Amino acid sequence: MHRKLTITVDEGVYDGLHEVIGRQRISQFIEDLVRPHVIRPELSEAYRLMAADEAREAEAREWVEGTCRDVADEAR
Image (cartoon, rainbow, N blue to C red; front, side, top):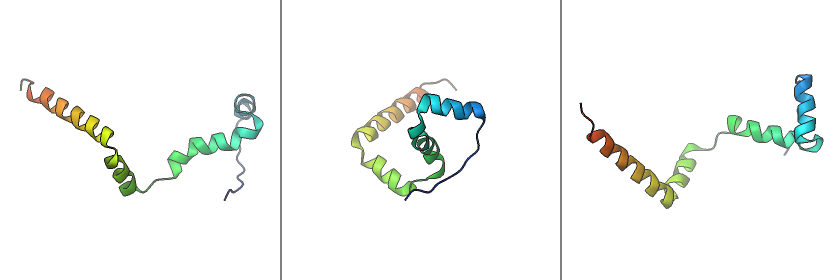
């Protein structure tokens, strides 16, 4: 469900939105920008999905192991 929202912006921002984004796309543009800041996914579900990504996990493991070797070789 969508809800209507009235906001106030500087005239230059308003003109720029119309010029760059286009009149019919401003709402979606603003929603796409704002969404990650106000909608928080369930963290446990996000972590579960990340852990299920085997390629990502292999890359992360390789990076961590490489970093540990770097630290172990440093002079104290």
